[in-house]
Length: 265
Image (cartoon, rainbow, N blue to C red; front, side):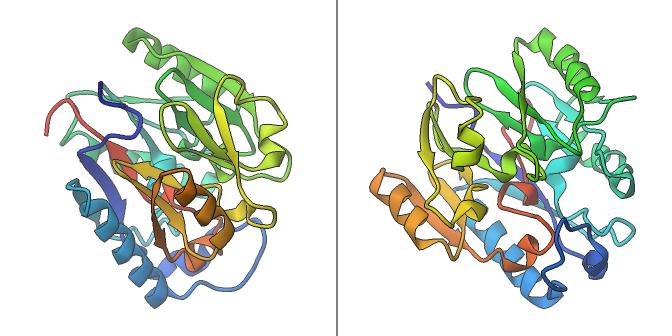
């Protein structure tokens, strides 16, 4: 049986625009290089395409400096797409901008209307449930509205806690297969992954916890050799992608794409 949580035929990405220098960041570690970011982004798209997936690459949205991080704007399930309601005021309009693209693939696109907020970066979809972490960008009201929207499709939503100081739930974790999660120790100690097999990032390499399983590949940010070796030894096909510039804006592998197998292609 095909694993729906990481088997995809399509992805949506958006090229970084010149306005990324104005992007949000929890800690200022320097201004990102647009040229290098563009190169990393091309490498990222090429890795997705290498699995046979069709990748839609959208033009930059200069009015939204963080819009390269398309995952926060929507949740794509096999049956339905849901436009999120990002918790950062400067990003609120990104979800509406994504809807016309989603409508090319889905007969219906639902919306988180509020008053709550929900960011895609706080949502981890596994084979058995949808985990959603409360954070500075996602609140209980947003999670409850999401729960109501996906319930008719048979999905169970479980609210979990994102540790203090961690921007998004998926900053500290990612799905590796049907039963396995890559996680930092600080997130795993909250017991949110009870019942799953957990592989911890190597000490000092917590910043690589946000990977993505995309078909046969595990896309992982370059520069974290011990964790990459752990995953390689565990049998995963790891592809390293430069992420230094996205990381300056709190971005990781999952943030850069919406990944899905739509009901219509």
